Amino acid sequence: MRFLITATAALMLSACVTTGGGVDTVNIHNKSATQVGTQIFKAEKLPAPTVLVMHGCGGVDQHHLDWAKQLQAWGFNAVVIDSFRPRSVSSACTKAMSVTPLQRAIDAHLVAKWVQGQEWSEKKVGAIGFSHGGWALLHAATKQDPQRELGASYLTSAVAFYPYCGSTFGFFSRAIPLQIHMGQDDNWTPATICKDLARNWGMSDNYFEYANAHHGFDRLNTDLFVDGTGTSGPVAKRILRSDP
Image (tube, rainbow, N blue to C red; front, side, top):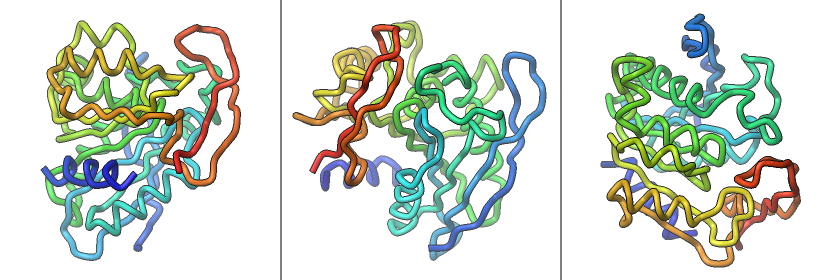
């Protein structure tokens, strides 16, 4: 875990918290205006680079706030984005497309654009995402998706923890520095397809796989089963377990 933390901080470099309220974004299916929720953790010394925190399929929880506090302690601003509650969605674990990963990728880029205009932030805006949020960041990291939907890209780096690396990403190319962190024993988002994607995207050196680790390995004091959809399609029990 110590190596994981060091590697994550290194990529982002290439406790005051405020509720930021809503940040404008757009619903890609009909181009209507909407907002996402934000919680902002400002670094002690400002301006500072900023990292967006993208929650998993269960929405924002203490795990994401803990990561924001850690990023803050490292000298970053952290902005936790809530893509679900403003859209009246509480969970996407059994319905992964309730808010699509592509939609959340666009949310991330538009929040990054907003952050770049804030006096407390430097222009560099990275993002860290978990599971469904990591999946969103794979879309956000491509050359194709941000350009097609927005005509521009605002994120400068991304770190994805146990994302779903579906086969469609093989048709895309990577635009920004990216890390992927996977558990070898993950029964929700298999590591093998992410390893293949990392190779195809020319980033094998930034792919990290942890032996005996499950989905949610970076969480604290967690050992439970969660109903969720996976690559096999149907809802099944997925293991969410800390890696001591």
